[in-house]
Image 1 (cartoon, one colour):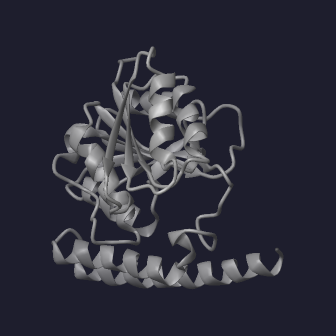
Image 2 (image 1 turned 90 degrees about the horizontal axis):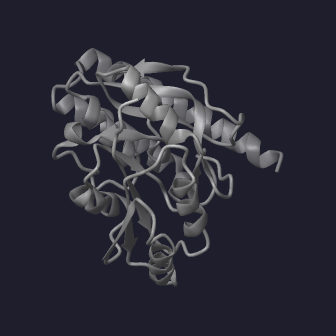
Length: 267
């Protein structure tokens, strides 16, 4: 298996209670990382002190920890700051309140070595159902991606040379990660999504309806719809396809609303 250097970017904001578990899941990967980039996004608790403590803890390891700090500007800005300095062949992202399955990177590198043309590898997010991750999955192009976001940020790894100047849209608070991966695939590139959960939230928070930005389902929907408009206005999808995915997204939105209401009823 060809060795691939992987950089991991972790936006850090007031995460003193979760960041150590998050970093431990990176360190304990069955495939070693090359560097971990921790971006302190203007935290007001003891996060920065914890980051320096973790840097000292792992100072004798083969990988390098880089700590960056900035005024609070949100996770997109923090990820972009990390992208600006990352030196890996492939870039992985992990939120500070998420952790990885221990074989996440190993399986994704196996996919990379098998499917030489892909530029991004994703996977599911949620409770880990198995000890081992199978290599079953699906190839994903831009049109398929428009119907479902196969590339959840904490579950995904992307090829450095194909990112080029692509960055997360810092002016977009909702579904900006979805747009980032649309940008990665918009020039006829291909991705692959592993049919297994490769990351999970430390608190097992659901994607919709719990604390954080994801509780604002309608705002997330508007962000998703704006992504389709962005692709159409830039000539990446046709008018007919734009109308199709726009309507499909609205149907999905109402399904999410119903499911969220049902979830609350049984809590």
